[in-house]
Image (cartoon, rainbow, N blue to C red; front, side, top):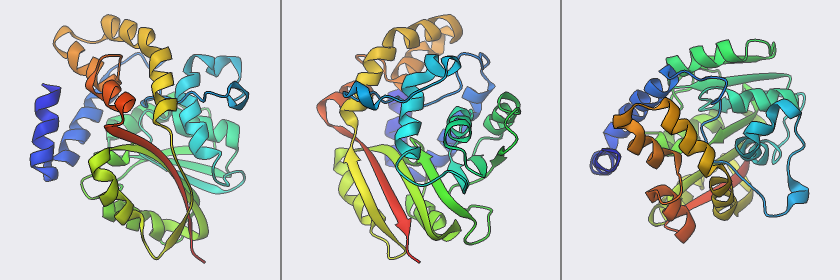
Length: 270
């Protein structure tokens, strides 16, 4: 089923946005909030001296948090007005709020179910809020935010050029954008052309595919256990593929380079 749907989206790109909204709405309706507040593939640096220092309560989610820390640590955030586009269940925005200390943090997601769930799960963080919105049509005035992060989300968007234009629009002059996501290697050239915009300048870029694979290796058993215990039988195969367990198409593609995972930062021109 998963392979059929992904093939359909390649044939008809206009269906991509609707499919991902349906998928994430469904995921957000799943329970087990205490077990699952992050929705990324994770990150594990080969250099253990670079591992994020975490409180004990966050250790179970270390691998997912480290991907967010990679994004957030790459740009100025402390004391600033920050936005995450594609906030999902809100674990990443909550981490940034607690550890990187922005003045305010807004998490925006296309799924209202995800927004409601994140609001409930992280209601103790007073400087953090969640809103429903469209990455391709942000409901914020020009020059609103000092910093924006986007973690493993933009591959779901129907019109990524509109998304990048909106990021530039709502960033303040001199503001920062940290982007972490993946693409099939044959799509990298098109993506790089989208990044070449007069409104900002790329400041850093690197390939982190093997760091993601290390995380997938470490989290494999935990994912299989959660899927076995909490996912209905007919959906188990789709969830194993979606979550990138060993042997899945996504895992193999990260490993052999057919899919490239990238981390980039940009600064809006003043």
